[in-house]
Length: 419
Image 1 (cartoon, rainbow, N blue to C red):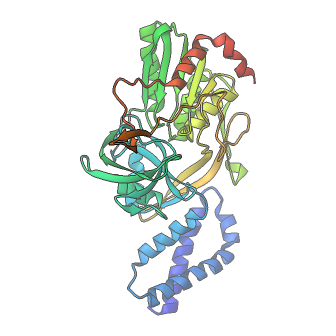
Image 2 (cartoon, rainbow, N blue to C red):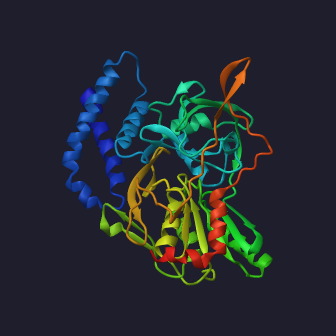
Image 3 (cartoon, rainbow, N blue to C red):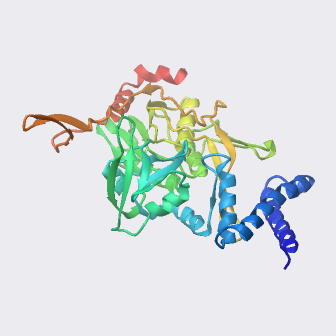
């Protein structure tokens, strides 16, 4: 095949693939109207591809080059849009099913740096002491500068029992600290619950998965059986909950709300905007509710927190949330790869977008950072050492204690619902 023939064939094929992808939700008629300009722009790409194929010092893998080009294209859009190779696409599908091998941390690219959004409870990452906001600067001695999210995921995940060493930089630290962590099978229990004294109910949602809403209802049924329905109030803990499925955030919110808009999703084309509303059926009785949030509360957990506060159903306690108010649509591609594309932003019932802003709680309770170092004298010299924490030192969750106080003295704090 001649160079020009190959070029024409590639442009036609690439254009068709592009048109099929863009036509979803936009209409083929709109795409065809701009096909001439798209063809000219793609011609530049194919010219560059041909130059690389014919002149690069070594023979190139055309598929890898094209994958890299698509990845680069999406990287120019935002931190949440991404191209997934077939292997990465399969890995992504595993994440929403609640069981996979790795460290148990949710990561993202924030300001071009690999960042821990939140560690998942009772996982190796959690037990190692990783925290939301930590920057991973190295994985097994290799710099993470310029790494893609799914390259990082593939490096961090692995077989149960294997080790990985990550270098972490935390705010306030003078230099990165190495964490060597043993991988394990991560089985996420998305809903946990407990009943405290005075029948104060504690419900923890770790992540919004396929079964989260049904697990929440099962937990509430168990709570009603044990309390006879006599509950003082509910503490809904969404701290370090990185989000998950939008539909499950809506279903969880609907458990506590009997009417009103839960969240509205607005995209580039107003015809595709969606509004999710609450329903009376299935709503629990009206009770004092406190929602715990922090910087690791993102996406779906922010939808729930925003809906319950805007609709005057809950008081928020903790620290400012992460601020991810965009919606990503997963679009499968013909070769098994996929696009994770930002297609819309969501808005709380009051019409507020929290994207890159977050939600500030009604009652801000900061958790003081434990001292990482202590100054000691050894052999007459002053030495700075890592501080050891003894088993006798009790760790008090001051945010949780504040939530309990609010529930037990609801009349004193109820004015916050009217702000």
